[in-house]
Image 1 (cartoon, rainbow, N blue to C red):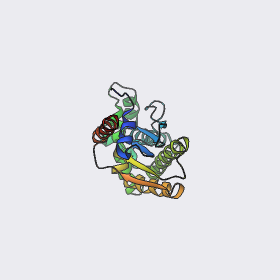
Image 2 (tube, rainbow, N blue to C red):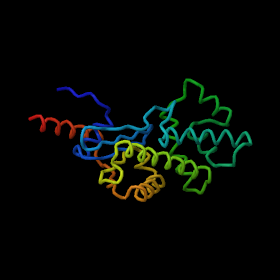
Image 3 (cartoon, rainbow, N blue to C red):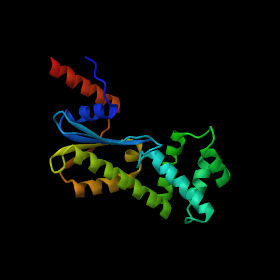
Image 4 (tube, rainbow, N blue to C red):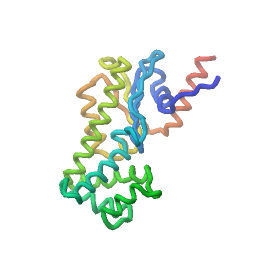
Length: 213
């Protein structure tokens, strides 16, 4: 048999062994899946960079660019994100930054990589960068809560699997998100998978084969 499904769902089923669970991914983009342990799954987010991907690397990067342009307009506070982002993109001023956004050289992955600059700036005490990461954390928290609620597993034991570069590499987001989830949903068993997602998908396939046999 051939099963066609979202790879995030496959990874979730592989990680939980088809038991109730939630998978949150925050890398270049973001998405959340929930499974009720029976046959129902729910999804939140994952609409791509034009419509959403809140809390993702791209979202963090584009928020930072917006704040830099606001600063140079005099509509926003001073932030060291300006010098960091211009250096990363090899640009000399905010006008070049604006033009880059609408040029053929624009790249979703490149914008997502700016999340590293935001993290560095936050560690150096930049208030704008801190606020961006706080907002990203809240967006990811809402993804988890909304999808768990739709799957009707809130208040019941379930596994929450956190994946993606943002959740693995930005400690401020990871720590604050875990605290928020533990407070709102103490029944969740939170884990950070060390395997590549493809290994989880393979486990999902093996489970399916065993149950067919």
